[in-house]
Amino acid sequence: MENISFAFNATAPVFILVLLGYFLRRRKVIDGHFIDTASDFAFKYLFPLVIFEQIYQVDIRANLNPFFILYCSVGALALGGAAWWIAPRFIRDRPTCGAFLQGIYRSNCGLMGVALATNVFGPEGSLATVLLLPFVSVIQNTGAVVFLTAFSPREQKNSLKRILLNIVRNPIIIGSVAGMAVSLLKLPVPRFLAEPVSDLAGMASTLAFVALGGQIRLDNFFRNTRLVLWGCLIKLVLSPLVILVPAILFCGFSRYELGAIYFIFGASTAVSTFIFAKAMGSNETLAAQMVVYTTVFSSVTMFCWLFVLRYLGFL
Picture 1 (cartoon, rainbow, N blue to C red):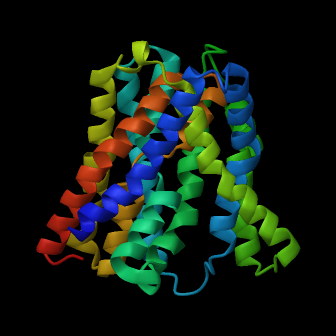
Picture 2 (cartoon, one colour):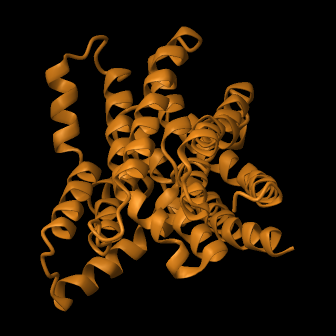
């Protein structure tokens, strides 16, 4: 019951905000201009602060298991490479392929993963998840930029230089690198800066979910259902399975580290994928579907994964 209650409490606020955005758009309180402006503001300014705040507060050097970080980082890269190789063979439309790749790759690990780890293990037991977050976050955010740039509808062919420039200039990547630099160099963040950063970061998810709800059109939201369901299966079941099984069989990680692997790789699709897709000209409808559908189904997969891992004695 505790896990069911947690899953419901974690996902219900998301749907309330999404429904609020849909309702406000239907009532013409917000319009397309507001959604575009809010999405752009969240992408360029708010989500970079979210990533920065999550990373800079972590003492990356303390209690760091280099092999654990290396394993998960290589796993994240391998998942991205496999997705890149397989997905274009089945999805011919470039914007759709880019949005699909991003949706199955990027996790809501910052918002959902850390909260779940804290709920299961407590603040001290969640340290492995918090320490893993900046490394996987940088890899996944970089991968998202690469996917969306490589499959951009604006150009049929993207040069390596263009992809690298998009990575370097991407606000999320800048926030991730800045957070890691502050953490590793132990630079103090004065209170008069930390508080505004925290306040602005706190706006990001709320604004993004409302904008996401305003974007929903029921006449096209149930299109591509088969593709979305395949995306949910890959994101919530196959991806964590591929990373967890070798870790359990060969690596000897602690239960906190095995939990961190699931919390990071098995979380629902990051809400900012919708913002990414909209900002970079990808298939924003599919991106929105992936966020909502994986969030819905994660309430079931979370319970199943936690039950099985605990029953087998791995958590």
